[in-house]
Amino acid sequence: MKNIYEIIKFPVVTEKSTKASENNQFVFKVEINSSKDEIKNAIEKVFKVKVKAVNTIKVKGKRKIFKGTKGKRIDYKKAVITLLKGETLDYSGGVN
Image (cartoon, rainbow, N blue to C red):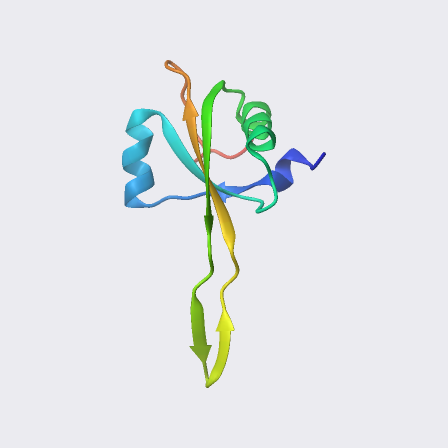
């Protein structure tokens, strides 16, 4: 099993994810090979909250050209975490 601090990389703070937090949903960038169960356990242990659901999205890296050389940004995985009613998550203060 992976270290829980390696599974969760950082929260994704965008206008869309901030609006989703009103519905008790939070978005994190996570390790690309991690499963939904591993993500759920890591969130519950690190932030001490109860998770209702985990939805994941694999994002393919964009193709780019830099100084005539073709390349590609890395692929990554996002996890949308839905918490149980009454639970709150404050990731601005860091890990407990």
